[in-house]
Each structure stands twice: as structure tokens, then as C-alpha cells.
Amino acid sequence: MSVIRTAGGRSVAFRPRALAVGLGCLVVAAVASVFAIGSGSGDYPMTTGQVLDTLLGSGNPADEFIVNDIRLPRVVTALLVGAALALGGAVFQSVVRNPLGSPDVLGFTHGAATGALTVIVVFGGGSLALACGAVAGGLATGLLIYGLAWRQGVHGYRLVLIGIGITAILTGVNGYLLTRAQITEAARAVLWMTGSLDGRGWDDAVPLLIAMAVLLPVVLLGCARAMRMLEMGDDAAFALGVPVERIRLTVLAAAVLLVSFGAAAAGPVAFVALTAPQVARRMTKAPGPNLLPSLCTGAALLVIADLAAQRAFSGHQLPVGVITGVLGGGYLVWLLATERKAGRI
Image (cartoon, rainbow, N blue to C red; front, side, top):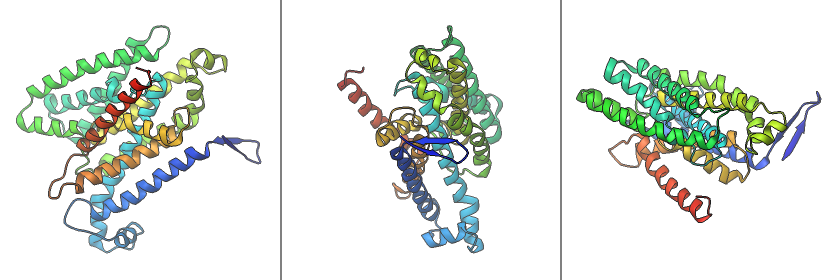
């Protein structure tokens, strides 16, 4: 642990390896973003020089249209969604002290899907209404799980069990809503539930950007230190002066909002919230929630996965959720085998 002290008496503590991991992931995400903008979907290939010139405001009108109006919003949405899901996953895994405690497993993304499906099937709403429905569904699910798990405080094990039960219920509800949908509505709903960045514009990215601008300082600056103490146990954290339930409620609310806004922008992209914090933890080799490295890892993972979804199969583009689902499913199997081998499950 390194500490930088300012002339005003303030100090900032950080782990050099974790900082290097975060910066490395940002560099990877930036390189992948430039490559994705240059060779993204469509029949208009661009060189790296053209992309950089256009981003710096020196491109011709055609390049500016392709970059600023079509490809850049998609890449920015991918970066933001990956960061939001990864940070939400890191918070949940830290609070429940379980590597499987991600929003995918606990039902929060299913709740967002239920809200979106209700808007599509029952009300026939457009993109804005769908996004609002996803956020409302995620929030309602968060309140329900938190209320059911409350018994003089929220225990991580109880939260996981109730979350798994709510996931099973919401899976049935979502299946029923799909059976009630017209064929065009069902196709639209299934594509959204798979998780896709196709056609995403600034209208999708800006609400998530605003949400992250508000929530990131709350989590990273206001609660990170208290979360590290919470991982030692409630009694130890309380003895060190941490208001346990207030911090837990704050970070859970922030994580639910991050996941809900991420799902509203691109659908419930599978396994990013589960895998990114674990990948970051293994790279940093540091205890604690690893919030900032997880955020950077999630952004890099999703922009690379979206690039693979566009370019891996010539002539066919896949929803990014297919790529993350395949990779994340393989990772989940490996994680369960590792945990069983270590005797932890």
C-alpha cells in the first residue's frame, strides 16, 4: 500500500499494482475502441489515422458522420455499460462476500428484464419507455429483495438465497410475458433480453453517463473504505466506527441503479457483472472489493466482446450478449471447479 500526502495534510492511499491494472485496462479499452470505430459494422472501413483525426475534429464530413453519429455512440455505450455492470457486480460480491453474488444470479437483471418486457408486451412502449421500465423493474426488484432479506440487518447469505428465489420467480414471469406477446413484440423482447449494442446512439449513452457521474463518487469516494472494513465482518466494521446498515443500503442502492441503467441501455448483458470483478481481483492479487480495477476491466471486456460480435463471423453480426454469455458461462464452470477443488463449496 502506497500513500501520497498533500501539503494541506490530506493523504491518498493506493495499491500500485491495482492502479497499474486499472490503467492497463483503460489502455486496452482505448485501443479496442479505436479499432472498433475504424472497422466496426458497415461497409465503410477507416484507418486508425482517419479515426483519430475525426475524433480530434479534423475529419471530412463523411468520416465525421460515420464516427460521431454511428460508431462512437455504440463504443461509448459499450464502455459505460461494461463499467456500470462490473462496478455493480463488484459491490454485490463484496457485500455478500461471495464470488457468485452478482446481479445476474441475485435477480436484479431479471427484474430489469421484467420491467422492460411489461413495457413492450403490455403497453407497446418505445425505446425511452423501455429504458424507464428496465430501471423501474430493477429498482422494484432491489426493494423487494432487500425487504425480504431484512431481519435486524441484511445478511449476505440470506440475500443470496432470497435473490436466487426471486430470480426463479422472475424467470417464470418473463416467460409468461413472452407467451402473451405478438410475434414482432416477442422478437424485439428476445433481442433486448439477449443484450445488444446494435443501433445504440447518444440517447442510450447519455442517461447512463449522467447516472454514473452521480453514482461513481458515492461508491468510489464515499463508501470504498467502509466496504473494505465490511469485508472483515459486521462486528469488526461496527467496532471500527462504520455505520454498517447505512453503508450497506447506500452501496446496494447505487449498485442496483448502475445495473438497471446499464440494462436499460443495452439489455441484461450476461456475465459481465460476474466475471469482471473476479478477473480484476486475480490481476491485482489484492483483497477488498477492487472497485476501480473492476470498473476498468468491465469496460475493456465489453468493448472487446462487442468488437468480436461484429467481426468474428464474416457476414453475420451477433448480439454482444451471445459472446459474453459463452465466455462467462465457461468462466463460471471454471470458477465452480476451482472453488470445489479448494473446498470452499
